[in-house]
Image (tube, rainbow, N blue to C red):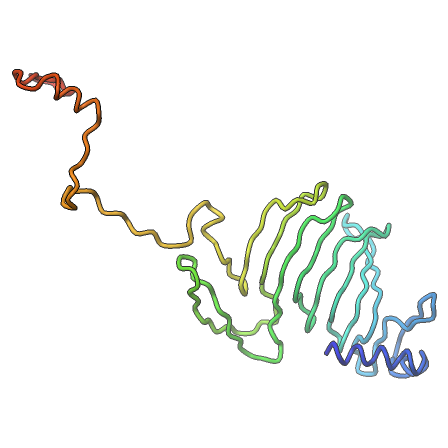
Length: 232
């Protein structure tokens, strides 16, 4: 689809805006004369779009720009505040998030996300889900395609003032790669070590204090030691 989109844009530039406008039922012209917001004869959004969303219910307004292919967002879309500050850079495929998306505040980059769009032409899709306890082990799961994106790849949270990474998470098709590590636990099953019974040929070493006590009292009458119990 990206090849088709690039072909349309190149063809539009070669043939002039009249050719592109002829394919649009409605459209707008930018200040430079570029054709924007094209709706074709089948009522599908096509080509470059500039969208303005006004303030609603206390939520600030914003502008976003990108391209549509057959009424679905495709490629890179950018979102800005009404003052022109960059808020987000998102990657789309089939109208869903696909690839790396970045989000900003006035101070700088705050978060990076990775996404995987499921092919909407498939009724079902298969994904490999990592085992949370055993590295390198995956289970194949069949999912009904509900037309959504899955978390996929590296997610990072930044301190926007310094640019340093504060937290990182890894996902494979919506499953955390190291889910237990977020809680300070290993993602590998640990085997319980058997107790040392002395049968392995090594004699258990007594603490130095015990050895010193036995040395001093060797050969003496057994000393009765109070152990905290009552009734004696």
